[in-house]
Amino acid sequence: MVDRSDINAVDDAAWEQAVAREGVIRRLASMAKPNRREFLSACRELGLKRSRLYDLIRAYKARPITSSLLTGAPGTQTGSRRLPAAIEAVIAAAIEDFFKSRQKPSINALYKEVRRRCGQQGLRAPCWTSVRDRVAAIDPAELVAAREGAQAARSRYHPVAGTYRIERAFEVVQIDHTLVDVIVVDRSHRKPLQRPWVTLAIDIASRMVAGFYLTLEPPSALSVSLAVQHLVQPKLDWLDGLGIDANWPTSGLPETIHVDNAKEFRSKAMRRGAEEHGISLQYRPIGSPHYGGHIERLIGTMMGAAHLLPGSTFSNIKDRGDYDSVANSSMTLDELERWFALEITRYHAERHRSLGIPPIAAWQEAVQRRDAALRHPYDP
Image (cartoon, rainbow, N blue to C red; front, side):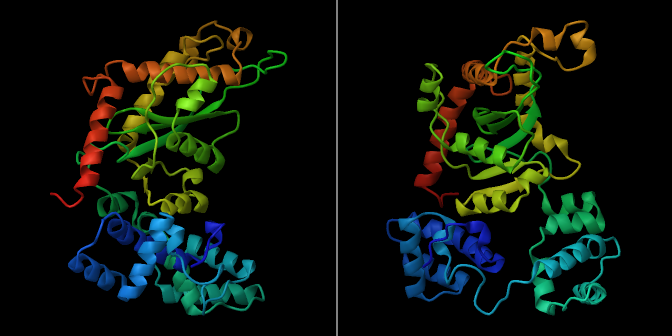
């Protein structure tokens, strides 16, 4: 068993094998003693001998993350070869502008196109299996959307609207960004800077804010990872550091993170980071904004409150009127972060219009349902 310090460097095939194993082995590892039928069924499903499955369960219990289930030496799998960057670029370009077309060419046709382009650039053509493996790594929904349109992808790969019912705490968390409707100032001279970005996460079952991250930088994989870090960690020490005495009990790993199709959410680091901890990453269907309704409403609620702050830019020019947002700005980024924490904990304690109870009360009920599901995972 190999300790992977950089999961992004792991060969795709090896990583996909570990991800496929993780769901099955996590289930077995959660049992005090798996019964014989369950164990043998897992052996057949994973194509493993009993002794090997025992080894993997022990490794997973010691470190319950996906990379514990990787085998072999770091880097590329035995029998496979990493292609030169120039050839990888040729394959990627051919997939993007040839294979992802409404003509729906076959993999054989794609391979011929790759060979042609390599010949033009004086490169040695890769083998057919290398091209096939790159195609296999494409998100099927993304491929269908490119070849047949967004509607076909939605009908084939995404749930029908109206079936989105979430009951357990952290069963689904939605994440999104927005520009804050407030201009902040610098710490030293209190001079106006710009509008910051906030990344917010909401627990769907309870409508609790699961975490957030405030920054002057545009959305990126880093801002997403820091928002997820805030989501996962307990909030007590962080609130103490801000001088806030409030209850914000959300923490832990979500089962599913639901995001839109922005590039920072589709990065390899984001996908593998989620898979490492057994988190399902679900993308919003193209052309279906209602699938992000919960986080959009939370953003609207937070920005509505922010319009009362000094330096607010409001939602639009009409609302702003002759108010000088720049001249009236006075809050630093740190002060705005503290305001967000106070506003969020206040929001948690107020009755939620859709739920009929405060989000913090809904969280307690959702946690009970989650705990009951963990105690009896196979009950219908």
